[in-house]
Length: 316
Image (cartoon, rainbow, N blue to C red; front, side):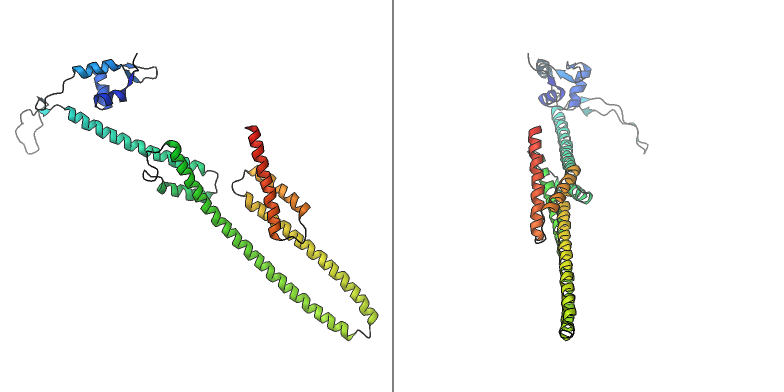
């Protein structure tokens, strides 16, 4: 038994519009049936029967139509005017126009669907980045850049790549801005450290001159003061080491925050920051550099990513 035809397939076989097929069905000229969902279906033999029995009207045949109303200039009623009955060429032209309209609407809906796909991909991005992606999609998504000859999957891959490109540009710019801020902060810290060192050097010179002048008169007192200075230096060094260690830990926490602020789930980001804080407290030494601290933070974050991937693989 042949497969039943939809109303669109019948229209293509008869080279007429869907409205003409519907009209023929309602008039009883073309027999059809309805599915449980209310869609029209036709037997192929019924369509062939109608094609065999239809006759195209002669091009010069004319049908009567109602008499025109008198014009505003008071002309006498004109006799009835006849017009040509629609020919197969007229029906073909109407069918082609309908097809063009349907193709244009389908293309508009396809492009709008791709834009929605891109907007969905950007939902978790920061507000300013999301707005930038939305604006770019309006200009980027077109029939020229994403032709209808592509499959849905291929088109979505292009849109996803575009969203990733815009996001990467945004994040690169943000990273550069943060790097500039870090460099500026480091420069301020270096300047302040140099100033403090100059002050300490100047104070040490004054103290040395005083010690030289009173060396013979108060050698014992000078020895006591020397011991006090050594103790002070030790305390200052200890304080300096504590300050430097705290600065390195603060730097590591800041680096971890910057690395997890984008693209991380909130709960996972908080857990990763706690792991980083614990590792910094246990491992960082006073003689470390900021680069070594950054490497430690990156190692902890990468271990967290690998653990999440292993858990995801096991759950899968």
